[in-house]
Structures are given as C-alpha cells and as structure tokens.
Length: 145
Image (cartoon, rainbow, N blue to C red; front, side, top):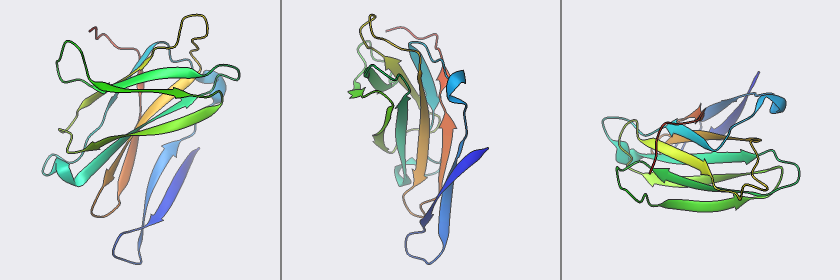
C-alpha cells in the first residue's frame, strides 16, 4: 500500500505526483537517531528543494528533534523543533544541497518522556517542474559529534 499526492505542474495543465509508502504504525520504533540521504540532481542542485518530515506517533508526549546536514563541523548547525503527540511536521532544508547530502534527525527529548514511536522521511522537489520523490529515513546511525 502507498499514498500519492498529486499537484498541477507549474506552467502547464499537466500533473506531477509524489508517492509515500504505507507503514503499519505498530511497526515504527525509531530510537534516538535517523538518517536521510536526500538532495537534488547532480547537474543543478540549486533547482531542487529538500524537506524533512517527522511524524510523532506517541499518544501522550511531545517529542523534540534536532535536524541538521552533516558538514563535518564539530558543532553542527541545524533546526530544533517540537512536535505534539500524534502530529507531524515538515522542515524545509533549502535549495542547493549537494547530491546525496546526509541529513540527520535526532530525538533530543528528555529521557523521561522520550519515545521511539516516531519516523522521518526526506522529500526532494524539482523547483522547475514540481516533480518530487521521497525516501524513508533509516533508523540508527554511527555518527557522533
């Protein structure tokens, strides 16, 4: 099963779409970290934008996340946001990412209320045609900063 989002292609009467896989909620158990490798085309990355989505399936507790692009810095710059219970948020990562940029998502919620009932995805969109694709985040990660 999957879902598909359709939209009108900019400058035309045609459509473009993006699909997302269906995932059974009771199978989602992402611990502290996840990784998405998403970016625009190798030829002209500036024509693509990347978004990261995070879904919090915890029925009681908000979860706080830190999302950042691996630049090799000892102190990565990123964005921190809190998602209420049973909600989702999509974060724009901007245009011009290098092909196969590694984007990290870390659950930084206090240990007393931190949940593994969350999942993340990357969404890349062509700014010219509106063509889009998505990729589920991979739970875990060997990185340390």
